[in-house]
Amino acid sequence: MMEHIELFFKSIFVDNMVFAYFLGMCSYLAVSKKVSTAVGLGAAVIFVLAITVPLNWLLDQYLLQEGALTWLGPEYADYDLSFLSFIMFIATIATMVQLVEIVVEKFSPALYNSLGIFLPLIAVNCAILGGSLFMQSREIETLGLAFNYGISSGIGWFLAILAIAAIREKIRYSAVPAPLRGLGITFIITGLMAIGFMSFGGMLTGGDEAAAPVEKTTQVEEVKKDVKQKEAEIKTVLSIADNTNK
Image 1: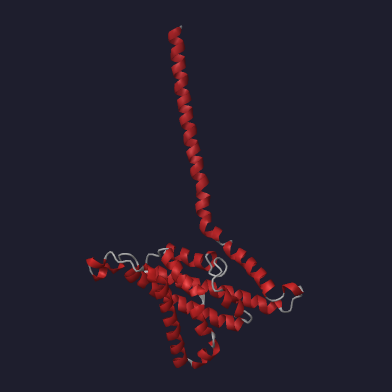
Image 2: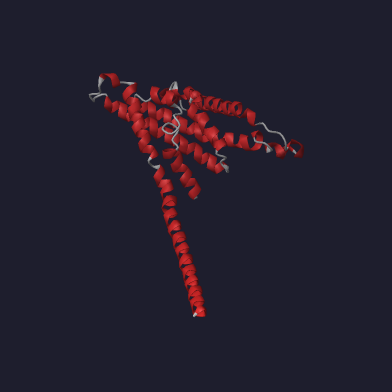
């Protein structure tokens, strides 16, 4: 359970797709002028990441990894199809985006019209492909953790675009210097937000760092005890030697 909680908060704040890896920056900058459009695109990214990351985990575990084809028979144990990872992951993402677009258009035309061009744009959002590649490189062990990682990464991207959209709507009424208007002030705010998000890393590593000095102090005390015992033994030996000489 703790593994799921740690992965959830770490993917949202510490390993945020936008602020830690600068993935999905094109959509992040282009669709963050209004909060309403940012919410629509962010929700779609969460949905697609939540589906494609577990699907690509299954592909990686049972098709692409070295020895993944053993379920077909022992003669396939030496096959390694990992060189097809990019093609397979992109094909999965494009297929899911098309299916989602068709289903939403068929059963919820109002939602389809409100999302507009943002639905097909998800297929070219590199944060979606980044989620599957990070899942593969970090060797996430179970399907549940892969699903958790997909949702939490999507929520992190959603929070990033929602926050910058809200700030850009309000900053129109501020006296921003002319050279910094537009993308200039947006990049500065993005950098400050990245510093704020990454500061959450101390919440996940603070306990381990605090335990280290306690271990060091106990080791130092044990060394001091050994030194005192050796000094006492040396004194007794020296006193015995003095007595024999007398």
